[in-house]
Image (cartoon, rainbow, N blue to C red; front, side, top):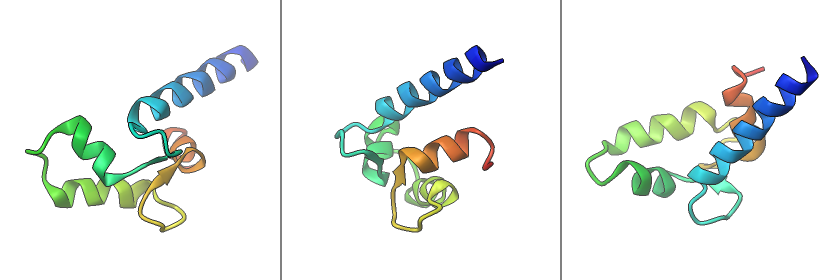
Length: 73
């Protein structure tokens, strides 16, 4: 069980770093736009950020990303 938890944490960290394109320690709307392309709806990007932005600062940090990936626990 502990090994599975470690692997899950490792995968979450790996995913976070792939999304944090500019290596600022946060995932921004611009990061998502660069990954998803210019065709993506601005409102959809804002919803994605808002849903995971527990600190309400307009971006997703690692703590928030982990919380989102673990079901908001």
